[in-house]
Image 1 (cartoon, rainbow, N blue to C red):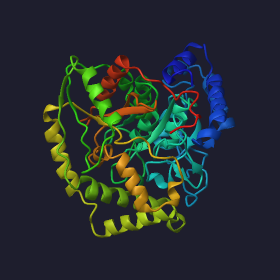
Image 2: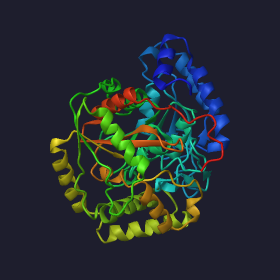
Image 3: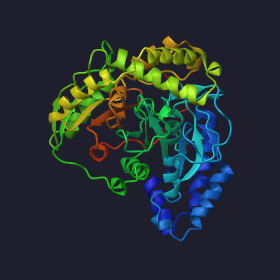
Length: 452
């Protein structure tokens, strides 16, 4: 979309743009980009236009914060009248009877759901491919847009919609946002409704926005969190900021471009804030034991509740078996979480925001990872995206912010992390970064050129 969500809503409020026109433009852009990027699971042509007409007919549309804004919903929460496939033919294809609470809030605020976006099966992995096809990165179709909110990120980065819903259990908002050069916010635990207990991955998964600008992310977050004040972004002053390029998993190399993005960001914030180099004391077994146990057990619970497990991809059947064994042996217990939580609070005693790379390596290849083994997928995911999961484990807010381009013209990004309740601080700091170092809102039009 040429216009941001904030601009679309303002234009619909003033009468200079109709919701129908905004939705027609989005549907046209979806039609143009879907063959190349395969971001969409469901495209709601007639239903979306009817919803847009209903917005235009309302006398109170000025009171709707997202009036006429076309949005995408990730295909793992319920949209009334549409199936929720979770990237799997093993899921129930029946239309959902009601909206998830987050969808209800977005629609009540005037947003129009133009479609549902692709995910990897059961949203387990950090690349988006499934029996429904391979989703590709608008910046580089040979690379993944990330996962599991890869379809949402591809939809926004391709310019089809200005904002999209995502959710994040081990980095599934921040990883796709980083792959596609977008703003992505994972709220802290309990800030935005999640849903059924089995779908929350043991309290690690959160719903949040993916957007091209900080203002749009804040606006969408304010609706999802039912917190109107959060739509007003205030740039903070005199924060205590720590920068670190050390990965939370041992012996994980960090690509130079992603490390340099952190140092550049620290440099541009010096003078406005107190910036130092410091790394949290990550437990040695945080990623190898605690994260692995919670991830597999959470996905297994989701699988048993929503699918016929025997029909899953082979790697995901392995994943579920491991999760079942973890649960049976009581390994997904709170001990590791609490050790890490105490260390995180100790670190943040004199720190307001931590800045790290969002990824350790560039996005992995866009391919049918589901045809490969569980261990192959695990190694590929762990090597390129280790920085996100620690903050899901303890339920703290974190977000991705674009930080320039690498030598190949692909996005590099940084992760901002704060204590519980610091979502508005993170958004405000992101706004400072955006003001000082603006980024391209969407992928360039020539993204289909042959790439490295």
